[in-house]
Structure formats: structure tokens, C-alpha cells
Length: 117
Length: 199
Image (cartoon, rainbow over all chains, first blue to last red; front, side):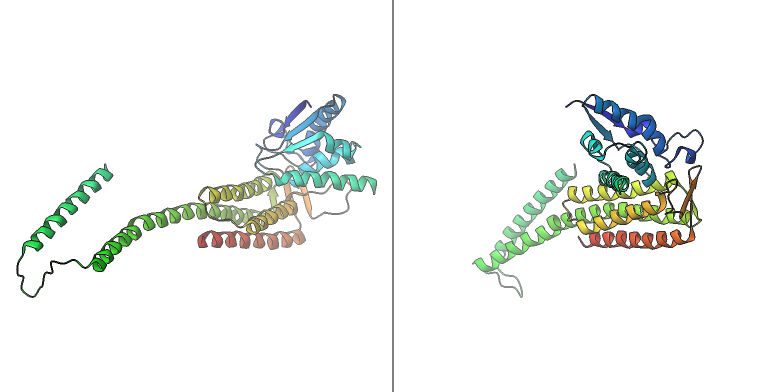
């Protein structure tokens, strides 16, 4: 299966807060901004084209919990995407911090649980 | 160069020993001493064995121990660095505000340091303790959540953190949780150091 790769370091080297309104001026590095400008549109594209989306988490200064939760959990909570479709489409990779993959999977399942509950 | 010098020295010692033996064998009478022309095979074997053991302990084992000590010192230095990162970071956290990005980057540094230390232990063929690693990474992740899991809009929970312009303000209740978790993290890093020191 063909795939598209998103490297979060290409969006920002220093991932920031949860919301755009919480960003330092001109930093453009919130989870909300990443989700809306990069992750969500790319995810829609790969789903339409029946491809895989590989997300490379390495090469940044480090992620705050709220950045990742808003980016990934927000796909279900804010964009109404289906948990299973997201899980089947994305592949997360990280050599530097492999536990982030578990964290993101937890944010997705928590958001899915809350959307159904 | 040093090895060639050692070899020359070794040859000189052998030659001197040989001629000393020949000289002693030719002495017919030596006051207070009796020179036996027969060789006791047990005594000769014992001397050779003693010589070999002395050489083995003095060179091979000592070299190996020295190598292990150096490796452990280098690895312990890395763990000390991780400990310092936590301590310096906590001084900033205790002011009640902290940069969100700095918090995220500090925990990445700690977790990556633990991974690198384990790689170094494997490279040096030293044992590692999976439970100690897990404890450090678990504490570090929990601390990161306490400091960077800022509240969602409309969420009633988690007003312990407020973020504005990338700066997180920490409530006193949250600060107590953070200090407790930080003590646990420092304790686990100390256990990790003690474990490496025992290797």
C-alpha cells in the first residue's frame, strides 16, 4: 500500500500548547494548528486515495501532553472522525521516544470512549 | 612503540635470568647455602604456576577491571547529568510558572538519556535492570502530564494548570503532586546509579 509521510519536525521543531490562542506570538506551533493545517487534511487525502499515513514523531525538542492530545484526540472530538478508520490509516513511528505511540493510542481511545459515552 | 620497548625489556630479563642461573650452577660452594643439582618437579611447577598467576592478575585482570571502571564512570556521569537536569528544572518549576516548551523538552532529554544509557550498558556488556528503567520513564511521563496536560476548553477538570503565551501557571495543589512525583523520579535515578555502580 502506498503511503504519505508527515514529519512533525517539518511543522515545528518546538511543539507548543494545545490551542492556537495559547501560542506565543508568531510561534504557530499548537496542537490545534497542527491538526487543522496538516494532520486532518492529509488524513482525509490518504483515506480518499486508500493510502497509509506514516507520522514521524522524532526530531522535535519534545511534546507536551496537550499538544499530542489535541492533535490526535481532537480528530475524533473536534473533527468527528471514526476511531477505527484513524487506527487503520495511520502508522506512528518514533525511535527517540517510542512510548509516545502508546500515549497517542490512548488519547485516541479515550476520545473515542468519550464520544460514544 | 611501547610494546616494542616492553618486548626488549622482557628479552633482557630472560637473558639476565639465564646467565644468573648458569652462574649459580657453576658455584661450587657458597657459604651458608646448599646448591642441589637435582630439581624438585613439584617446586618447579609451583614456581611456574605462581609466576603465571601473578602475571595474569597483574596484567589481564587489572586491565579488565580498569576497563570496567572507566566504562561505569562514563555511564554514571550520564545518569548524573540526567539527575542535574531534573534538579535544575525543579528550581524553575518551584517559582510557580514554567515555559510549556521547556517542560516538554526537559522530559524528552531525561527519557532519551535513559534510552542512551541502556544502549551504553548493552555496548559495554554490563547488565541492565528493566524495572528500574520502567520506573524512571513512568515517573518522567507522569511528571510531564502533571506539567503539560493543560485543560481543554469547556472541561471542568484540570484547572490546576493555566497556559498563556506558552507559559504554564501551576496551582499550589498541583505543585504538591509535582514535587512528590519529582522526589520519586530522583529516587529512581539514584537507584539506577547504585545499580550501575554495583555492576
